[in-house]
Image 1 (cartoon, rainbow, N blue to C red):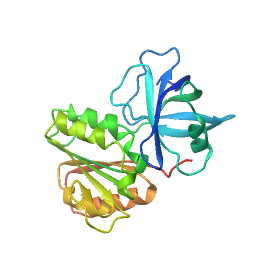
Image 2: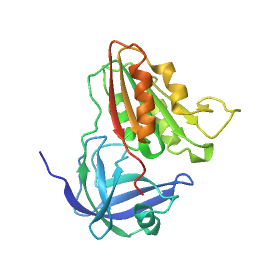
Image 3: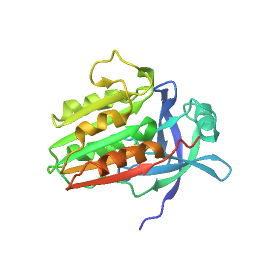
Image 4: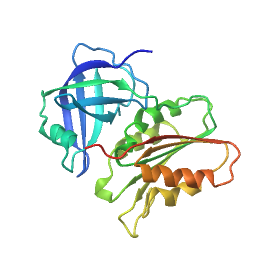
Length: 237
């Protein structure tokens, strides 16, 4: 087992992708090939010996960079640090870490359900699923509050271009009606039942309440052939 390594990253790109979320790209000092398992995270040093965990959202594995999506629209140690970073700023981190991952060669249907920055680990994981010859359909159900909170839809559209077996649905919990697909006015638990069927691997990532509710929907559906893989967290500001 390879232990997580201490690294220094330099900010080379940074942008607000929604009112609450900032995306940033770090060039890793002295590393030309940052190897990680899609689904893993890094621990960003936000103070003297204080760390916050952020999932890696690189499109692909390898290269000398790491990309993160962090909630920065509310105050907290991690949010404050990331908000203070400028281009060429340096920051320390430890990683990659974690055991959450895509199970290649599993069931023929794959459903990813994420809320907020829970989408981050799914970016490279969906890339893996698209390359999995055993998979026939890949569905992403992504939930945020309002349309202005949606981010990474450009990546979802890229996945659509890559393969006809991919589809995505965006659930807006703070909107009452008046939406057109792929947008829906409700929580992810509203969309999920349409995709609960046998021969499906379900990947859930988001706050603990969402994980619990979605797991209940799946587990109580009377399926005979399925699996649920979860990564539960509450935003660590």
